[in-house]
Length: 412
Image 1 (cartoon, rainbow, N blue to C red):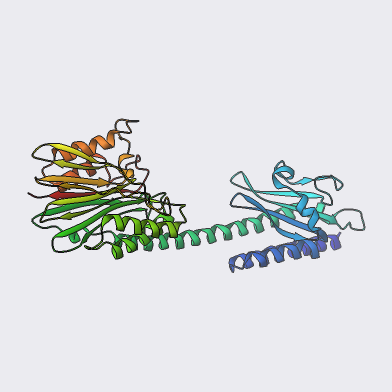
Image 2 (image 1 turned 135 degrees about the horizontal axis):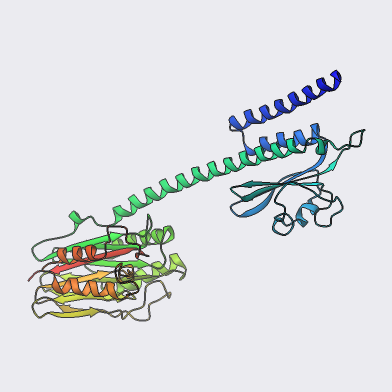
């Protein structure tokens, strides 16, 4: 009796020492490989288990994280969704079962009622008395399995959080860099003949919208509002490339026809015609008051003459750049601004904003634009009225895309 008690105490101490060793390994932030090695060593060397296999769920994908002693073809034949999801508690299985040949026990590991791992063990070495050591230490094996799996899951979650933080910081940096490409309000070329106002808000940290105002000469100003198909980082990268190209090509000497053809060629080459850019681009001569513009697949700009109270829609008559290797035609339109007028160009994210108070009124945003430009004394008031009406600076849940507004006031 005394001998049995001493043996039991020694066994208990041995188990506790192994658990303590595993705990220290976890606390030392050892990699997953070390944890799996210790787990395998305990089961195979101390408990005399011939096969140890672990399936782990990472990002909704089941993979075999550990295989010690099982033939690869056996592992390949097991499908977790088909063969293991039905096990919700530790289960003894028939060793000749077709779906799990050579395995004796299935140990499911759950977290928040969701299975995150399955441990399969087999080829158990029987003791002299015919009692399996696994049966004797089944709860202990289950405890170790849970500790190891939870530790591995915590490592994965920690690594995911580090990766997400790195991505967040990179996006913050990308957002800051992209904002440097967008003209600041104090840098807009305002003078006694023309005034500009703008609003820019990407849907994510970075976006595919863009606007620019370029002083072409003492008498001429060029401006552009553009939108890359899609949104997010890919659209932002394409837009930054477009901005550099536009700045390099848009000069006082180049015609809008030639400019659009060159822009189209650059965009088509870089995007392989898989993405395209819609844009409204214009040039205004402050001496002759002539406005020439091209609308390439972009929402219609609004031009309102405040004296005659005439509202013109500067509609698209050219396809978006990048859709084809060469633009079949570039329609350049011209108009003389001979009275005080307001022009408003925007991206489609603006007109896709659904009214927060009138659910389902998809056309309400365009009405807001028209109402604002008809009833505002200047372009700053026009843009600010639109921003407040659509709650663009707040958390408007009806916003689904990048939003850009560029307003130009032609002073008489």
